[in-house]
Image (cartoon, rainbow, N blue to C red; front, side):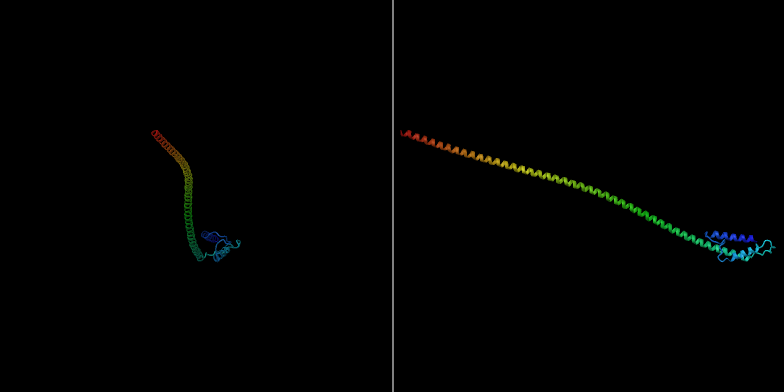
Length: 218
């Protein structure tokens, strides 16, 4: 008889342990009310009393109690299975939500990384363009400086040429003035010589005329 109850108790304990997560407990079988445990223990104690005394005739098993116990265990197992299924669904929903959130976070991180790479590429292109623009501006400045220097040299050369032309004009004018003065002197000399020749000729003519008159008078 005790073996039957041991088998029932062990089967109930095994079913309960299989349906529920492992939890520390001081009881061998989860029986919140303790009703069916006390009944089984009482029957076992009655079956295992003083072994030396003549054994009482075994009492017939209480099939109704056993069926009620089995039904209670089946109902509790079904409830535990339902709760476990609900917990599994809830855990699956939480895991799915976590996976969705992780996927969205990964997508956002990938988009942010792509945007950062795009911004870095744009910044690099802008920096390269700025460097090219600075180089072009530097070349323009160098060309402007060179043009300014060339213009300065050209202006200085033009000024030197103008100064040389002015000095040459002055020298030419001085030479012209000197030539004019010399020509005026030569002209005055020639006029004086012509006048002197004319006076000499007139004097000679007067002398000849006077000689003629003297000869005629003699």
